[in-house]
Image 1 (spheres, helix red, strand yellow):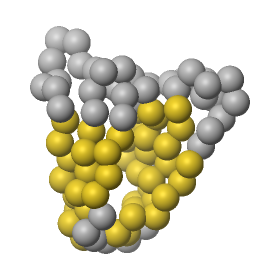
Image 2: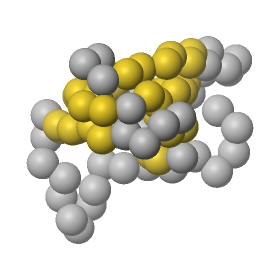
Image 3: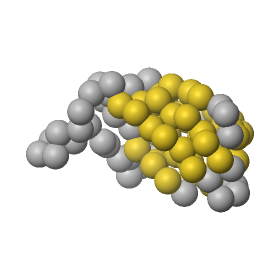
Length: 86
């Protein structure tokens, strides 16, 4: 499992290079869970918008690239975790 966080202002683009991954998304702050699950594979490209909790469950050995539209500030990174259910 990778990720399990969200960004308040940052968009994150993913390009799957190898393998298969289950991507679990959930909009932060919704009263009722709006969880979506996708299976992605080599060649797939997708964008995670701000305020969307995202988690990767790696199904097979995988490689991917991810790009952010904003630089991560080491002193104040835009990476946030949820300790309670969304």
